Every structure is written in C-alpha cells, then in structure tokens.
Image (cartoon, rainbow, N blue to C red; front, side, top):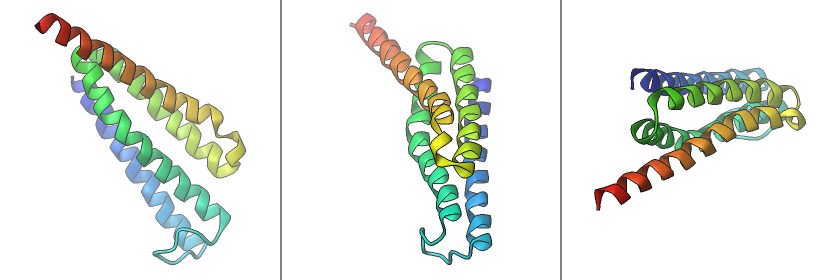
Length: 130
C-alpha cells in the first residue's frame, strides 16, 4: 500500500501545483479574485484545475478500493498513468484546449478501470462473505 499512498500524495501535490499555476496566471493575466473569467489564458489554467478536482473525487476512493480488493501494485500503476495523463492534459489544454483529448483519456481511463476493478473486488468480497 506504500506505493498507492505515494501516488495519492503525488496526485495531491500535482493538484496543488495546478492551483499555484492558476494563482500565477491570475496575476499574469490580471484576473482579480474572486473572478474566474476575464482572460482566455487564465480560464484555461482555471479549467485544468477544476477538471482535475472533479477527477480527484473519483480517483482517490477508487484507487484505495482497487488496491484493497484487487492489487496495490496495479492500482499504483494506474495511478501513475493518471498522473501522466493529467500532466499531458495540463500542457495541451493550456496550449490549445482542442488538443486535450489524449490527456483526458490518459487520466479518465485509469479512473474508470480503478472504479470497475473496485466494484468487482467489493462485489466478490461481499459474495464470499455470505
């Protein structure tokens, strides 16, 4: 589980870094808080951060449950793929939002696999418990 916990911390640090990038973009593009619109480039950074937050809500419990019921090593591997996908998403979305598909697939796909595996593992454990 240590690898899974490492991936969790890395995902949280990545989200923190994305938040810092939003703060920097807020200054660079002069979008005063609490505004979330005003300059297209700022809005790109902001959307990356918000989309990442939306995915973290699914990633973290799915990662832990998959590790518990299926395989910690596989969970960690899928988590690393998610981290790479988020980085690809960040770079591509800021450059041109139309190119975000690969990064989204590389981060959304692992989450889907983690959720399905967690569901299977939990259902199997529940079935064998009764």
